[in-house]
Image (cartoon, rainbow over all chains, first blue to last red; front, side, top):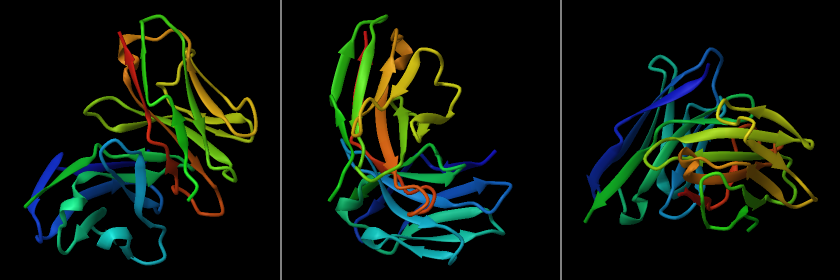
Length: 111
Length: 116
């Protein structure tokens, strides 16, 4: 069965600092991987997706993620955090046209 | 920009009552989903719907749950006899399907269901 594990339920960074949100996957087949973001009182929004075309994937709002097969990882990064990045971030894997989500990481950005 | 809309945004009900959560997916989408998120927990898959029938459902989606697409625009989730543990945020989502590739879902803002 395919699954994703997110390390760290909360991550706190200073504004301008590097953001690193960790996600590891488990899959018996080449996975399709995703990061979704949930802002307060909103639904989930696609941030970026990996579908095997390129290992480094760029998304919206300056985020990117790198697929590393050797580490079974798909970590999300952003060079410089902005206050508006404060939200909950979910890693997900596609399983027969449905998404299986990780437990989420809440990103806090300190002024 | 097209969006998935859900009504109501909040629903309070008594245990044992029936509730219907409503969703209007994006008009040209073919796949429809319900997910739920219990407070502080992960977003969980409930059911997917394609071509007017359930394509997959999770263990959570037992006989108390049903989905329906009564017309060309609405997609509903019915819980026949609510339990306290059904309290959660319920998200509807839709997907174009093959055209956009797997996993590209558009989510509504959710219905917060509180069972008292």
